Image (cartoon, rainbow, N blue to C red; front, top):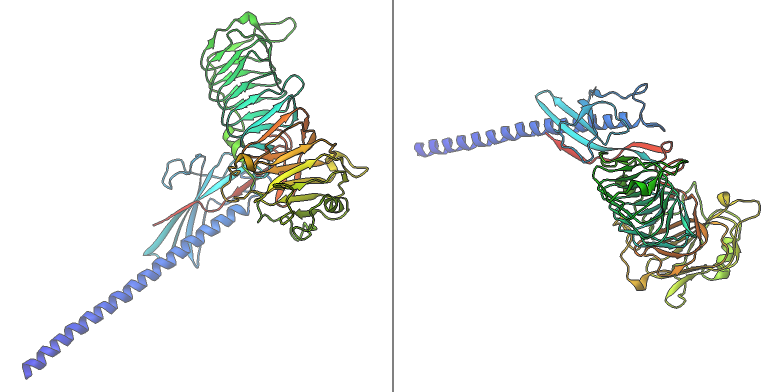
Length: 523
């Protein structure tokens, strides 16, 4: 009996010891977890303090590192933390331990900011976080500031186009003819340029891939540049007001003309006859050749222009007004007919948003036909994404007396994008393309946004903005003049140029910001 009692007592003692050890281990673990949790919270607090210190120093002109810099190191108590700030000019996000991180104040070339923050509650338990943020210094109008957008095909036969023309994706065939031309710069961001008829560009020409001219006339007021390809000038009568500059060879076999700058290439001049090319001076002289030039580097780069002219998503969820910028908005489907449109457009007052959702179809499309009307206020006409649009501007659209084109009311016709989350115009079948006719005088700035594009060819004479994807636009005759437009806060500024004053890369109209957290690691 006594032995049994002793055995039971020993077993109980062992069990009690195990329970006590488990409880003690749990208590110690909880204390450790508490210390680590508090250290992590303290580290993130230091990170947030650093972020605030950076953003508080960003003014209209960016960060003035000379007279008003922010501290590159900092600390705090309750919670306890120390932090350091580093910068990198790498295009791609560098690893937190990369050698490109430098201690310093961000500049115009900075792309990334790293904040290393260590926090603790007790000194024996510390946590360090490395947080990486994108740093942006660039055009204030991004992403809505852009020139005419053409994701797909664009043709302008015998048409005059005033404003920079940006072809974002695909090749471009220039055939505007002797009676037309591009009054501005031409950017072909992801393709080649082929001259299929007389091609006139008053500004510079920037093309990613090759440029080919054969048996057609080319007149360029500035530089003719192929950033990655070769240039073939195999036609007579070419005129270039600046340099002919290619990353590859320059082939002038059977060609002739005037180049007021120089032939520049890191490659070779192929079939070049110096007597066939002059610099246009009096008396004429030979065109200089630099066949040891580096590959062309342009600013802004084609990638920067591509990003700055990204597709604007205008969908059924887009907000068109706020408390500070009100708009008159009749109920959807209550303004549909020509007479109803005219009544809203011709009435003075705050800007108006007309939603044609629920309006009856005419044939297979919702028709937008204001006919003869004087536009007395800014007007936004919205066509639902799930219907086809038939835009008819055959009447006379007038502006109020005493106003000029630049300060007159604006007319926006927006066929909404059905997919507002992919950052691209939709892919549409040919049967879904919008139709558009414009025969009457249009004396107000007009923006036409067609997510699918226009399926008809037309002679278009108007001023404003063209913004369409997929099938682009097909002009045959007419004069289009780009004009800056805006519908705040959704479309702050839509400009008409890539470079220069008032453009999307206007050095005097930039913004600097520390964007949201891109990556964080803890240890």
